[in-house]
Image 1 (cartoon, rainbow, N blue to C red):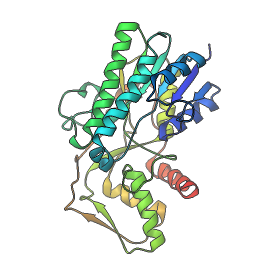
Image 2 (image 1 turned 90 degrees about the vertical axis):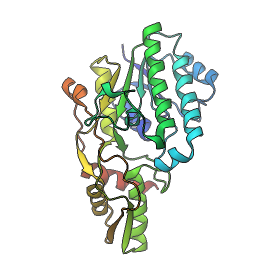
Image 3 (image 1 turned 180 degrees about the horizontal axis):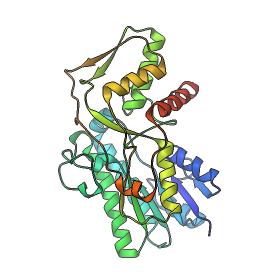
Length: 305
């Protein structure tokens, strides 16, 4: 039987890509957005599920933002993400035939987790303080999914992607993640013909980035291969320093000024790399290298922002 799928958060970074890739593969998709369903109102969520009768729900809905937004809007990030996740998952309780793909975040792992970070590291230590409210909301969704599985028999898979980027991201200069923030700011500096471009920290920390379409294909791979696992990391296995990342973005954007690193500002974690051995061992690997992904992302930014 062909799967009927509801994608919650279908207009965001992940949801847009998931909707595109599953639709191209011929799946019956309902791309839910704020226009049709208010995820803060559980009756609307229940009504949509009852009317469409999906056998798969991909939960890509979330209130997201970069370090500044996470740290200054802590209450909103916790409350809104708790409401979104609990309303979606609670609405699935009467329908045990619904499979659930729940999108988490690598921020759920402890601040001092050993790199590469394995799935077993979950809830083994203290969270990174600046985004702990968002992480707690994601951890609650994981535990609620586990409870649905144990108590009612739902198949729930929690995906923990590494740092994502791509078209349809949030390119706000203040409230975005590192790649869209750097692209937006550096593009502005290029237009202004600035001689210098300032970046927080030393540029030494190592990070892992995943092009969003690779995550969507990972979800499709998990669904089509009927992979059953509670928690699974999705990473690129490609590490890059913030300095190297900034140089890549400088090249893609065409900024001709000098990159200046402000070492008086904090670096954050010196290294953060997911251990994606479990998913890789099943046969999935990321396809898009960083240079190609940045090129696609910047071209989309120029045409749409």
